[in-house]
Length: 180
Image (cartoon, rainbow, N blue to C red; front, side, top):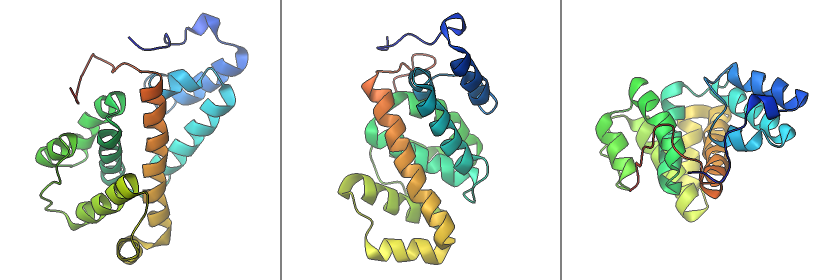
């Protein structure tokens, strides 16, 4: 049971209903952190636009995006984020053994060099709060500046999402317990 009940349509203001409609244009439902943020429409709207700007129109592809989400969700043990993204991560080509290693806190055996580099960058940011110069230079050389910004931004955005999920004890969609 979460700390907040899901928002009920009949209780929403007109502004909240407009943002609810905007959120459901790119998501099947308003849940997870958006169920929390909808209580403050300006935050829900800004977060929705930020996530969509990278996920839907950014340079980073879906596989890399979901890969970062998996790393961040595991780091924060953000069960809702993990449950909401695990199947998508598999569907976009992240190997099941890589996903399982991340879930259990182990460094995966990578077959894709881009995943190894992104893993090193994101885990360094999360664990050490820094991006080492050599990893930063490798990101730039491999992905260019714009995608490097997106990679780091996705890690930051999902860290924010994870703190909201954990702070409000947002339950997983189907009672999943990936970190128990």
